Structures are given as structure tokens and as C-alpha cells.
Length: 197
Image (cartoon, rainbow, N blue to C red):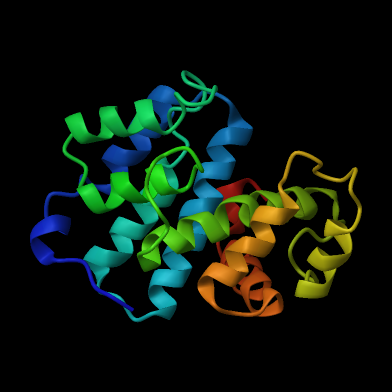
């Protein structure tokens, strides 16, 4: 796992500032929940890889703000590209803006760094697992990787979620689907209060 330079992460705005920015641009509770879920998943992977607190904050913030522009710029190719312009003006680091550009196929940035790969890998999956938790009687409590696999086979459930991207995400991380699903389930279960459960 590569590390970010201290010089890059020192300028990262605080989590409170980033949350305020999210709330300024995003009014929809479901989109706020999605951004929070992706941030939680990103933070969990950063911790698994024994990163510094500065790096953990960078990964978390990248997840939190990856879709912050979606309400104002929902169409291709504005989404992400317009958001990154705003983030750059506000002093967010290049590693973060490049990762956000890489999470869309038209962003012009290949998914090469661990942060870029992880953002793509947890984006659709986090949304799917939150949707699944909402329809389960005990939300995350007894959810396992197999629960997610079974739900993914039901094409009508969370139909907007790309099954192909979920599969591609695990491949990018070089781990099994079961391992990837379990990591995200556990991360979201631990922080479920932040997701409104």
C-alpha cells in the first residue's frame, strides 16, 4: 500500500468543514446517507491498511465528497468534473480530486492508486448494502456476504446499482467478493448510527 505525502494531507480541510460542504450542496437525505456510507467504507479500508491518521482522514473525506456535486450536476459529463473544480478552488488535495475523477468512467483518470481503486470498489457496494439493510428486519446485525450475494441476484432490488461495477471493484482490490462484502458490511454495521439506523 502506498502512502500519501505529509505535505499533501496537511492542507486537508477538517471533517467538520467537509461535512458542512456536503450539507451545503446536498439536501437529499438518501444522497447524504450514501456519501456517509462511502466515507465509512473508505475509512475502514484505510485503517485495515494501517495508514496514518492523516491518510485515514484523506480517504474518509474523499468518500464523503465523491458525490457532493450530484444534485447540482447530475448529468454526464458534468458530475464529478464540476465538483472537482469546486474542491480544487477550496484547497482539497490533488490525490483526492484525482480519485473522485477516477470513480466515473468519463473522468479521464485511470484507477491506479489504492485510494482510486478503493473508492470505485466501495461506491456501488456501500449503496447496495445500505439499501439491503433498510429492508432487513435487523438491518446489519445478521447480514453476511452471502446475504449480499443473494440480494444481488434479484435484479429488481436496488436495480440502479451496477452489479458489474461491484464485481469489478473486488477485482480491482485483488480480493474475493466475500472478503470485500464482509469488510464493507462490518464497517457500516459499526457506524450504523451515522446512517440513520
